[in-house]
Image (cartoon, rainbow, N blue to C red; front, side, top):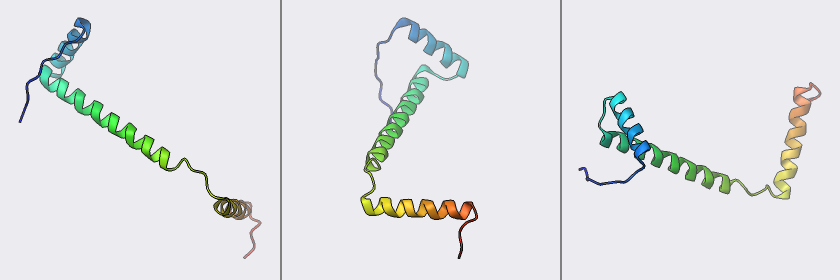
Length: 85
């Protein structure tokens, strides 16, 4: 199902839209639909990234930090060839 709508825009932008639609051999309506879909996807991805960043912003508790530091030392020793089984 499609819905008709009317929008207002700067004449210069309209001319660019016209030219691109012609170059792509698609209607202005199709170009606007594609642009809106792309903008919505980008917005959703940015929102998801913000949510992920917010979820991982907390710092590890002292016990996690101690384990992390210990693992780093073990890894460094293993890489440098100083680890003994």
